[in-house]
Image (cartoon, rainbow, N blue to C red; front, side):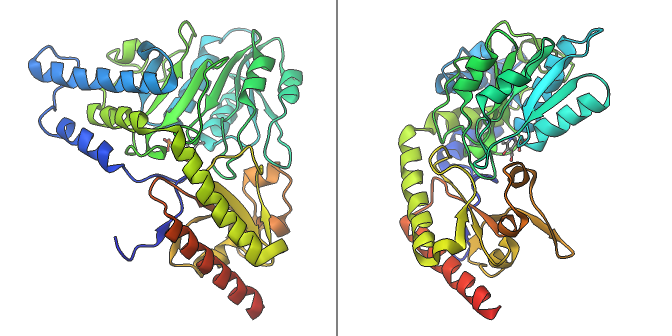
Length: 378
Ligand code: PLP
C-alpha cells in the first residue's frame, strides 16, 4: 500500500511474488484434485506437483526424487535431526554436532533429543563475525557422530558459513545437514558434500507453509510424519499442491543477478549510515562473507528498539529484546561475543526483490534523523 512503511524485513518473510501468485491460483481453483487419485483431476494436480519438483530440482542441481516437500524449514530441520537420530538408535547414543547460532528449529530439536536421552549433542562456537571454524568441527567429531548440522547462513547477521570446508572436514565421518532457509535465492547453493539441505518457501517469495528437504540419494532418514506414504513413503500427508506449485515457481524465478542488485543497495545503505554516523554504528556479522541483502548494525548509545520505535516509516527487526530495562542479547550475538553495550543497539535491515534506490535513501535519512534526535535528547 502507498503509505505502508518501507519493508526492510525480508529475512523475516518475503512478500509473495506476483508471478508466483498467478502460477498458484489455478491450483487453488480448477486444479483442486488430489494428486494421489487416478481421475483427470488427480492427474492435473500430479502434473503441477511434478513440474514444481522438477523446477526445485533444477534450482538446486539435484534429482527430483531427492526432494521431499515439507511445511517449511522448521519441519525440514526437525525431520533431519530426529530422523537421522532415529535411524541410528541403538545401545550407543548417537552424537549430533551443531553450532551455537542455529535457528531454534535446529537447536531446540537438539535440546529435545539430548533431554530425552536419544542423542549426545555438541554445540560448536563461532568467531566474532559469526563464522564456524571447520577445524573446530573436525576436532569435535567423535566415533559416534552421525550428523553435523550447520546453517548455510545466519538469519540475524547474515554470516555465510564455510560450508564446503566444513563438508571436507566431515566427509566420510558423519552426514552433513545445512539449513539454507536464508541462503536460497540470495546466494548460489552447491550441494557438494551435503547430505541434507532445508528450504523455506516464505523466504524466497513463495507463501508460508511450504518448504522442502533435499535428501541425497541413499541417505537413511526415518520419517517424522507417518501415514499413507506420500513423498515416496518419506513424508505422509496429502501434498499441498498449490503451495508446491508456488515453491517451484519461486525457485524458477531465482537468479544470481538478484544477489548483485541486493548487495549494491545494501552497501548504499551501509555506506550512507557509516558516513553519517561514523563510529556510532558497528557492523554485526562478516563484512564480505554475508548474505547480500542483510545489514545488521549496532547503533551505539541507544537500543535497537528505541531507534526503530522512532522510525514508523520503516519495517525492520531489532535484535535483542528488552525486559524491564535489562537487555538480553540474542543467542547469535552472545555466541559472537558482542558486548551487551553494543548488542543492545542492534537493528537488522534486510532488503528484497522490490527494494528500490529511493527506498534505501529514504530509510537512510529516516534512520539518521531518528538516531540524531535520540542521542541529542540524551
Ligand atoms: N531456519 C532459518 C535460518 C530461518 O531463518 C527460519 C525462519 O525464520 C527457519 C529455519 C524456519 O523456517 P519456517 O518458517 O519455514 O519454518
